[in-house]
Length: 539
Image (cartoon, rainbow, N blue to C red; front, top):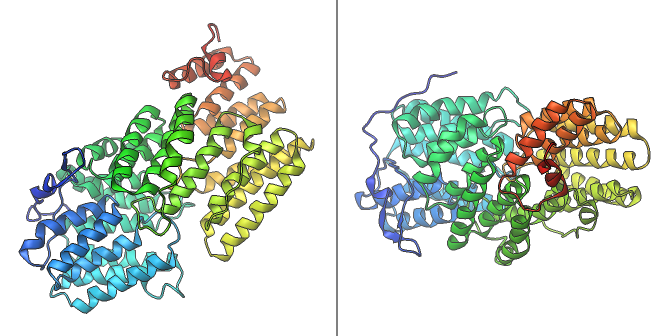
């Protein structure tokens, strides 16, 4: 692994980025985006505006960043690097999956404007050349190839300009962007983190460093390492909705539910004020997930029925948006309904969900998956088979679109649903083996950043199924494995207690019931039947 470089103090941060006197929130609070400085050959009078645009880019405020870079270019037409910023704003969230033809075309147009402006700085030219790799021949070259080419180009910038902190930050992000979900060595993520951690010690107010550390460690075995950056990021850039949301990725991984709830409430409010409604819905999905894990079902229902519909009504699928594109808003809107049913074990409700067609097959799959599980678990395997057939068709669409990640995820969903169909039809040994294969497949990949977690973790479901076929010792093993990967999940903890009790291990049962009560210390009173069982004296 290449040793990270500590950058010289010549790249001091512009204090104007901490508090922008001209940029005020609705409530009169000065804008705070962190401390950033990006050296350019542009006119001196656009320096502060350019730094602000880069700060917005680091916090994935893409719509605002694009406008800020456009304003710089309007004031200084010779500022070629401003068009680089516009191109990256059109590229959007590196972890958001496939790009739309519109965003790719507009990003490529921005690169062409940057190249036409002919920056006098070789350093700036190397940034522009790197960004060009993201869009080059996008109609014929697959996205993975282009992303890897971008990483290599940014590595060149990083090595050529070892005192450039911004090059280090953007290179680390690029390295993380190429990580494969199947690589459980986390080599790319750890390479990125090594660069970022060293810099963050010396530059604790830089938004990109904190942000990208959270992304680098956004995996079950690594997540605790991100807690310091997660808690710092909300203080560094509270004016950016994503800076308020992103820490919840870490809080979700470690099961810190109230921290996730609190920061996502702030993020959703900030996103609504900013008009990035996909970001607001994305924050609500993480918020609902945390409410459900901590037994706060009434609060989850309020978000689902009262708050999210107002935001969804304002969602514009053609808008650039923030870190969470409009597509992520549709995903969240569908997911929160499915989660509310499945996390509560309300299988009739899950089976009754209404599928909503969208331009995104993996979004449409959410209701189909929940319906299939719900129907199978209420003894209606034929109805479940119809939804599995729809899942299969949606997966084939994704494969045709060359979206390998989501095609694989839908394949796992088909396996899970098919297992419960087999269970409903009395083929219980087959059902267990099907579900075990699905759990192994799910463990071999990783969740998308678009989601706080699977709609129902396959290994957790396997534990429930093993308990249902009177194999409590095997069930406990699977549930404890789930809890290590996804700590403080309500259902895994409850069923671990039940499995321990069924094996005669009363000490373990009491431990898990007590843990559930602790997880749900802010939970509804009265709460779910499972929670009330855990609360009974002597359990």
